[in-house]
Image (cartoon, rainbow, N blue to C red; front, side, top):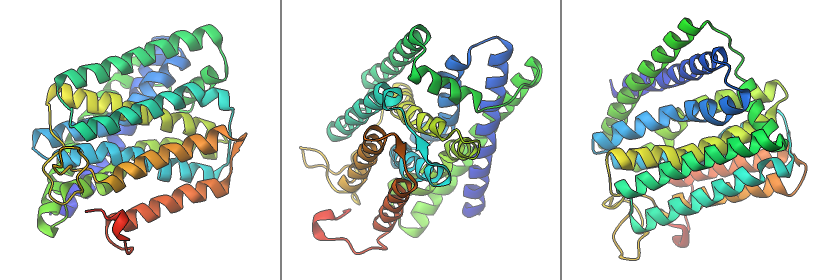
Length: 339
């Protein structure tokens, strides 16, 4: 039964997320909202709604490991799985100037997340500040992009244009609402099934959140990136991954902490990450992989004019290695112990 719940939840999250993005983008076009704004907001936020609803429901059910693992795992999967797949399908021609601003802000958000995990600061004030940062970033980006119309603006416009839908206003609203309902139901099924699975097989909820749940909630980003690669617009996949990672940290964790403050300490199966010595649900390997994935993304993007297939293969190999270490399928040296 729990496997059916997980499978059903993943399917509903994927279909619901797709419907929500398509419906909301179609409505935005009927309201004459620019592709730039659509790409920066609706596409980025829409593909992150599965993570948001899943994390909110997980915290509400006391499964903090699934909530936080979902965000950290999704950000890892976005780079090492989603972007890697897109690059292998179609190498990305990169204009370093196009991602310098967004990439730097993503690195800053990742550093902030590491600090919050270390000091366990997920109260309402933190949530408010994270959401405020996201709003400030989006507002500044829209103003700068409209004013300059540079490579960054064209990349964000491409993120909007990749969603080729033109429903009527009424139908678009119905599809968006239906998608949101599907996401809510799917998230509930996925969290219930994941919690049951974790307890029945003796795997921590955090590991389930970092893997099964994170991959499931990253499916909309994967679908968007694959479509972009097949249409020879793989640069859109890069912008989508950066935007999604920003939404995950600032929007999802921010809203989750604002609505329902939580603590990341208390999982005996994780290696301590705090100076106080208490155990954190995030191991140093998980956070290290997150930081490494961001570092590789920026390195491959900013040091050349193209992210080549071999670099995509390196990213994907990194994800396979991370999964192997997470599930103890690969012998782990003592200095890299995951707990």
